[in-house]
Length: 240
Image (cartoon, rainbow, N blue to C red; front, top):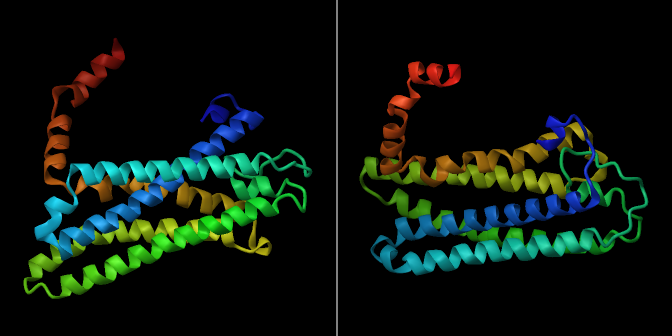
């Protein structure tokens, strides 16, 4: 945003490191929270009588803290390791933001292997969370198909499918961004994939988190019905 406003494509070394750290912590926390949401849906559908006990406020605080702590640790390790590697191939990052694969392209041929190893460990952790999500949804769909009421099945599917769609999009685009062979890399493809995994899932978060919640929709309707949002009042405010 700053580059667009000031019509520049330059970023400082410390700014690039800060950007990489923030992207890393938000990426890992997002994925951890999506995993927690799969568990939440599993408890709500497969063990509804125990939901109040298993998903009480204390459990939610612990899971949220674990998600953000894992994101912080992931970002710290990747940022420290990536920027400890000497850059021998110039200083131009061929992306709209500082991204690990693009920075590794600027590193010396032997020095980047440490970060590649750390990325492989992260991929295994991501794959472990993916298996957890898949197992949760297998049990969820098995339970939903046993519901005799068609309305009950529809309600359960409508609660799960948006979350499952975002998880699928998030994982597939991240895997393409970080595991695709160098021969398939191109600036246009890298840009599209980066936008898909960094912009689209967070943009859909309001939908999968809360926009299906009746209380929130009623509150949003009340806010939009305020006189301030009428065209006349907006025109007067702009005129003043």
